[in-house]
Amino acid sequence: HIYLALGMWDETVAANERAVRRSKTTGCGHAVTWLGYAYLQQGRFADARRLTEACGEEMRRHPAMPEHAMGAQSALDSDRSSAASFAVMRSRYLIDTGEWSSPVAAMKVNIAGLISAEFTRDWVDAYGAVRFGKLDAAIPAIERSKDSIKRYEAAVQAAGAAANSPRMRLAKIEQQQLEGLLLLKQGRIDEGIALLSQAAAGESASPMEFGP
Image (tube, rainbow, N blue to C red; front, side):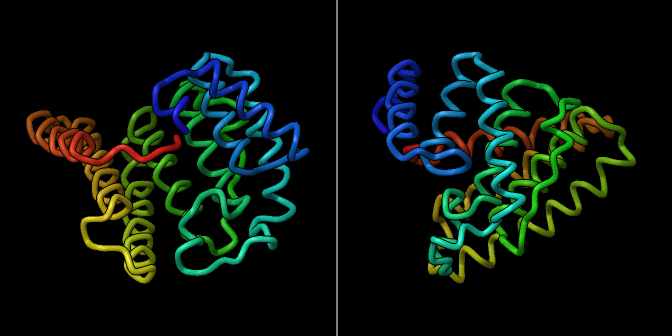
């Protein structure tokens, strides 16, 4: 945790490679998620893609990771299901590499009724559509994301989180990002910048959480 929080990517990679070897993990999991993120920070995109694709294979076979108890709280943890782990790894790969036309972008997320997976999948697909796609495709993608954000917020509240909890703030910030980018794409520059500035301020005010 400390290595990652300090941006010590060589040490982060070494620690998580050891964890993966010892656990003999071949698909998704906490150490794999962190290792893939650290590879991206090092610019090792091929290694990050290899891990993402391996997690995708597990996700297609076992989206819910039956060894984990899926209570209201744990269902929000991306490392508690293969579906959510893959959704997170895929989103980070696409954003950090910019390879929106890559095979990773085309890989489907088997959400298996898991709101954490659906929330991440819909947001990153909407982000890609509004940044790099056409307006007529971006608008419905953003509407899908807004719908899953509402259901994610309801799940966070059901898990007992406070209204100002990091997860609730995250949902608001991500919706502001999409709506701000859409305004820019529509030529409403001042409105878009104002909304994106609000999102940036909200992110700056959020506490540091260990982990990618």
